Image (cartoon, rainbow, N blue to C red; front, side, top):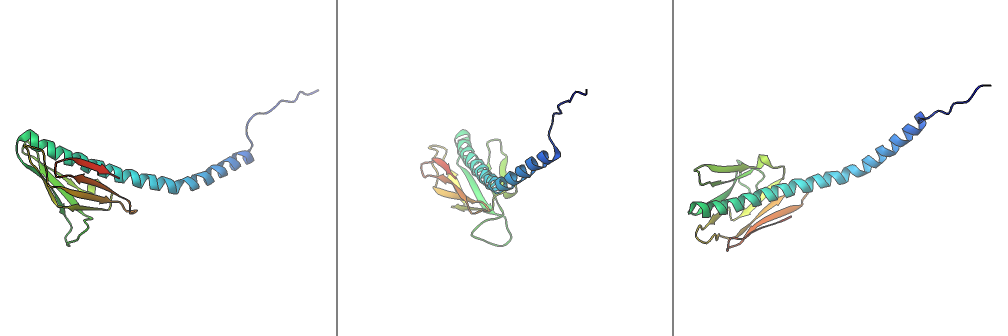
Length: 154
């Protein structure tokens, strides 16, 4: 009399069914993941610009001199929407911090006005809004109020 042994494991058919189900679920989740990545890129750009505008304001107070942060279109052809842009401002140590659009993967920036000047005595500034727009059409803003308050939203 031979004793039967009970085999453990999965059959090839069971593994193929599980892989097919996982593939279907992955194809459903992929488009929503792309939207999440676009939103994250936009928020990163807005937060970076927000931080640098705040830093320019603090440099003005720290150095006891008015400091300007200037946004400029670096494209050859003039445009109202900047797809190739940069901003720069002087730091207390004499260097100029310059940030270009190649460091971000967002589509466009519009800054009205193009230059924000912070008064070192009160920390006030000329007011305006910087609008950052992603490729998918979503946008975020960095707002500088006349009293020097800087806010962001996206």
